[in-house]
Length: 139
View 1 (cartoon, helix red, strand yellow):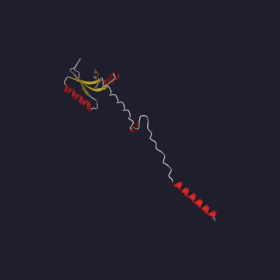
View 2: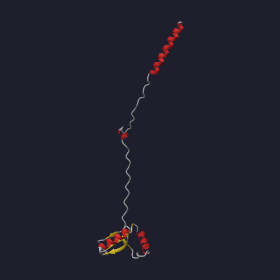
View 3: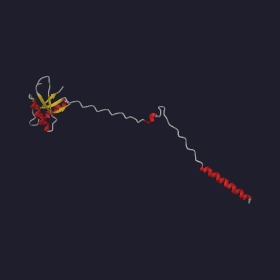
View 4: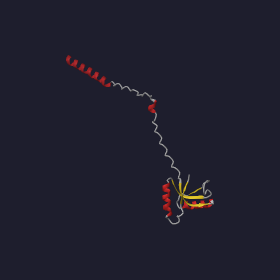
């Protein structure tokens, strides 16, 4: 009987000891702060994206097809309005110097390239009513 009693006490002791181990909480892992040589402030700042380069503005036209030339500015403006109503990008061009500076020229097409302007002038002259179209070089 003593043996049974001794085994029962040993068994009870072992169970209590195991229960204590289960109830014990495992220690939480230690959290470490990560810093760089630049400091923690740099980790919180957003990265700035470089701004895209603005597209250069296109060069203004230098060569113009002239549909008419007028001494009276109101006649030039009237003709310019007629061309605009037909869908052309018409404008009145004036010069304060040089030959024919007293005339108001009405342009209906502009070009940056001289060859392109001359080619278009030749093409336009083939159409009825546009035989007198000429190229103005604006400096």
